[in-house]
Image 1 (cartoon, rainbow, N blue to C red):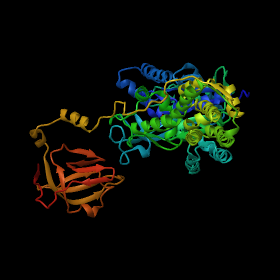
Image 2: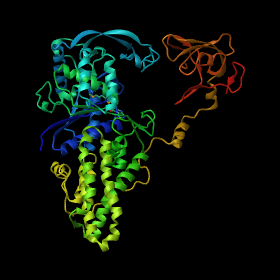
Image 3: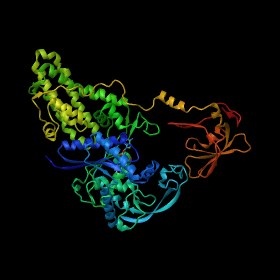
Image 4: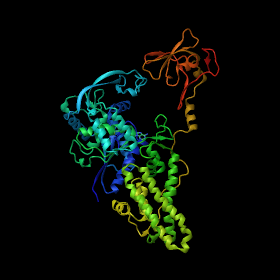
Length: 633
Ligand code: MSP
C-alpha cells in the first residue's frame, strides 16, 4: 500500500460570526475527501481552524466589551466544539493567534523581504474617519459614501509595505496554462485567468490604522505596522506544518487541495500561489471552489433570521443525512438551496427508498428464507456484475476532481441495479420453485451492498459502518483494496438484523424561520395609534426640475413643488430606475416633515415614497391628478 502523503485544508473561519451551513459545507467536503484518502491508504492530514486577526474582529470584540483575544477564544471554541461534535477528523486546529503561527508568518515576511519582493510605499485609499477603515471604490456608496456608516469618505495616504504581486503575473498565467486542473471546477478557472490577464497591481500587505494583527519581524523596527489579514491567514496552511519553526510536518506540503468558497477563490488562486513562488515553495495541486448556499431561495442573513444553523439540522435529521444532502444536492462549484422539503425528499427518496430499502430486502428475505446465512456462486449475475465493475472503476477519479455529486449519483446507479434485479427476479414467487436462485440473488445483492457501504463511508461514516456490520464486514483500507480496487466478491454471508437506517420523515422537524402568521404576531407588538401615523406629514408634490449629481450613479437632485412659497430640494436615489423625462412634471408623494439631511454634499428637504422589490423601484403616485400640497392620509 502506498504511503503517499495527502494534505487537505478548509478555509480558516473568521471569529466574528457563528458557524452556519456554508462553514459546515466546506468542512464536511474536506472531511469527506480526507476520509476517502485514508481509505485509499494514504497518510492524510486535514487542517481546519480560525482566522482571528483584523480590524473587523477588533471592532466586534469592542462592541461586546471584550478584548480581541478574549472574544476570539470564545468564538474559536464554538467552531472547534462544532467540528468535534460532528466527528470531523481534523488532524490540527490552527488559530492565527497561536505563537507558532505568528512566528511562521514573520519568518515568511522576512524571507519575501530579503528576496526583494516586499518594499515600502504609500497606500492610497478611500478612508472613513469614523470607522477608521479603508474601502475599495466598488464598496463605496454613490462613489464616496462609507458602506458601514454612510458618512463621506476621503482619499488619504497611509504608509504601507507592498508585495510585488505584479512580478508574478506571467508565472501565474503560465501555471494556470500548464496545470488545467489547478482550479476546480474548470468553470471557475477562466474567471481567475481573466482577472490576472487584466493586470495585477502590487498588494499592500501591512496596515498602520489598527493594532490587532501580527507585527512585522522585530529587526525591521516598524512597531506601527501590522500584517494584512489575508497574508497572515493564507500562511496558516504552512505554519500548521511547522513552517518557520521546527518544520516537522513540512513533508505534507504541497497540499493536495485547498477547499474554499467562491468568494475567496481569488485570494487562493492568485495571491497564495504568488506568495509561495516568492518563498520558493511548490504550489498546491488544486484549489477547489464551491458555490454558495441560500435558504428557500433567499440569501441567508441574520436580520431576516433565516440562517441555516448546522446543529439544528443535525439535531432534527441526523448527521449522515445532512452530509449526504450537502454533497448530493448541488454539483461542486454551483450555488445551492437549502430547504427542509428538499432535505426530506432526499431522505425519503434516495436514502429510504433506494438504499435503505435494498438493505431491508436483503435482511428481510435473508432472515425469512435462509435464517440470515446464505451462500452461492455468482455465475447467474455476470452481466449485472460487469456493469457494476464498470461504475466502480470510475469512482476514484470523481473524488479528487471534486465531482462528489457524480460520485454519489453513480453509487445510486449500483443500488438501482440491485433493486431492479430483485424486482425482475421476483424472489417471493421463486422461493418455492427455485430457492437456489433466490439464494444466489441475495449473495449478489449483498456483494453490491458491501461495495456501497465502503464507498459511502467517506460521505456517511456512521450509517455505512452500521450497514457494513450488518453484512459482516469491516470498513478499512484493506477492505477498500479487496472489494473496490480488486473487486473481490464473497460467496457466503452471515448477516445481522439492524433497525431501519433511514426511517420515513412525514413532516418537517426543524424550528423554522417565522411563518406568515408568526410574522404578523411580531408586527403586532409594534402597532401604532392613528395619531402617531399623522405625525408623518405626507403631501402630493410635483417635480419641477431634475438634475444629475456629478459622480453619483444613484442620485438625482429634484426641485419639488409642495404648494409652498418655494419648491423643496429633494435628493432621491432613483436615477437607476427613472429617466429625467419620466419624472418631470409628474406627481409624487413626499414625506414633508422629515428633518433635512445632507447627501453627497446636497441638502435634501424631504423623501419620496416608493416601493422596491426584486424587479426594481417604483414611485408611489396618486391615481388621478390632484392639487399639489394636498395631504395624504
Ligand atoms: N477567514 C477567511 C478565510 C481565510 S482562508 C486562509 C474567510 N472566512 S469566513 O468565515 O468568512 O468564510 C469561510 C468560508 O465559508 C468561505 O469559504 C466562504 O465561502 C464560506 N461561506 C460563507 N457563507 C457561505 C454560504 N452562504 N454558502 C457557502 N459557503 C459560504 O473567508
